[in-house]
Length: 137
Image (cartoon, rainbow, N blue to C red; front, top):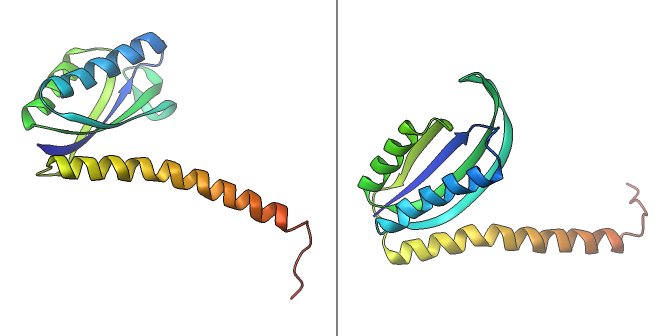
């Protein structure tokens, strides 16, 4: 299997149900071909740099996954047919990825969320310890 990331932009007027349906369909294509979805990140509604198909905004979705090459061909074939998608981009991150590498990547992706929670807790503790006095130089 290879390591890929795909970012795609959906039409903004679809609604949450259709966003979820397209994302679930794409994830099921990956898993049906023996791949593994590592991360699905919904970036949400964003303003486009320029109009695409007369749309000024789009709903962005980021997928990080490991799958065979034929899976990417199938995903992109469906994306070309589906007029609800404005744009998509797939990037190959690694040529080979075994189960051990998949597990490491899942842990790596989960670690930033945990470290952000720890950092915010540490910052709050620092701020409460500082009682508002400034250091003079």
